[in-house]
Amino acid sequence: MTDPVIQANDLQRHYSVSGGLFKPARTLKAVAGLDFSLSAGKTLAVVGESGCGKSTLARMVAMIEEPTAGSLTLDGKPVLATDWAELRQLVQIVFQDPYGSLNPRQRIGTILQEPLVINRPDMTKADREAKAREMIDLVGLRPEHYDRYPHMFSGGQRQRIAVARALMLDPKVLVLDEPVSALDLSIQSAVLNLLTELQDRLKLAYLFISHDLSVVRHVADDVIVMYLGRAVESGPKSSVFDAPKHPYTKALMSATPRANPEADKVRIKLSGELPSPLSIPKGCAFAPRCWKAKARCAAELPLADAGNHVAACFFPEEAP
Image (cartoon, rainbow, N blue to C red):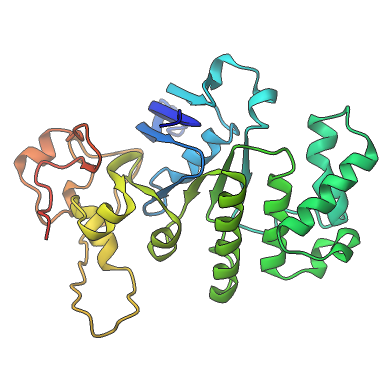
């Protein structure tokens, strides 16, 4: 078994939030202790409601933000003890919005060459152009697109350009932060197929951030389900989808549309609102909305045991 490209242990990210006039600042724990690993050629999907911390995790792995605590290792090198300029070439990010992530005043060729201009100043202009044209072909665009501006492309084509730009430095990891959520369904399928083809060809590792479980089921190898900064369940995709252990995961699965309208389905409707991340309940954060919660859930923080498919729950769901 090959060594993981990414290894995280008790990874945390906290923010200091003003409490108001004459009030002390409060701490928002966006990510409150996450453990995971990701190997070459594999896709780790992180899912959960808005505010669960998945995009904060993406920014830490992409080294846009530093972890507050814990350890994060990229290609065997600890992030906080290594030159970021070196590590950033190992990890690139593709953002959700293909309309906002490209400079509208630059031609596509210039946009693609920019990472090389910044990170590899020893490359000649001819070599940079050749590399950019190679990437345009790799993501399924035509040679004449090299001299066009972003506004001349559709949403799917712009996301292909964003993927090409992320690949310019030959990274080992792509962080995909909701990469298809802004696209039409038919275009989503084309972009996801492109990402699968690129992963097979280049042996890329994907950290796939999404709220769409249908997409996750199509692309992931392993899944982490997050709730208010913590992983409540993690494991192989097939195990998590076919036999969810945590009540929150089961509720998410019940809300996912199915292709077969005649299939038996029980919709679980959660009561109550998502707690404020500035005032997370003691014990299990999901307890106020959980139909299985008991006194122990409100008093103690459940921790996941070691294993292949685990859940942080005192009363996990039984396998069907």
